[in-house]
Length: 304
Ligand SMILES: [Mg+2]
Image 1: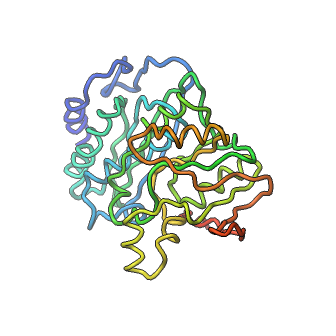
Image 2: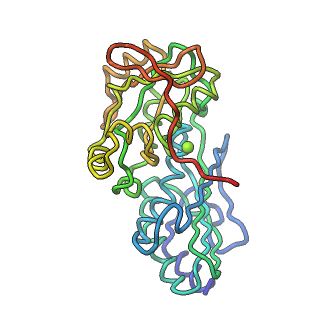
């Protein structure tokens, strides 16, 4: 099966200027220069998606999109991907084709070279793991550890309820991150994969400071409202703790933040939702200005 499949795939992968040697050899050769970003994400049937319910094309697209979001968090430019599939034996070939049918158009629209990968079948459930490379822009990589007390917390887009569909169909904020990193002085950044409050607290921790979230300024998505009607939690609770929004959280100095908010240089809203502070920990602030400790909430893989 593998040979036939590799031929099928090689015919579908477009040529890419970085790809000196592509699919079909023992390793790929990439003509990259400069510092390289590397990220990997593995999606598993029964954990990250459910094959009985979710279309394989959407799964394939998401497997690449989550990696693109991580490169966006570093304000890098995605360059090349390596795809590993562990396919169930029954129906594996057709499944692989469908996964790629979802993945290839996204790779093309972000000019990502498909450099190769591995395709196995086994008696277990589907697992898809993509390693994505990216290049660092002349501004350097945006890391989590650069926030300073007094920095404002800026976010792209809206939060909560992505499980109702956006967790598959989101647009990774690659272009937005590059635009902002180029035009403004960003101190730190992260993409929200596990939850707004949890991922914001990760910037604070990495930067050795704390963070205050203004609850009345959190951009709550329509989907968070829908989900709240279904489960009785509040839309705000969903916005703070639901995973897979794949929006950006940024730390920016106060004057620069004012400039960015006035400019609104993206096609999507940029919102200030709080600030980083000296005292460690995560805090909520209500409309009257009073502070309360806030438990970082979100999705965390359980390891036992
Ligand atoms: Mg991330």
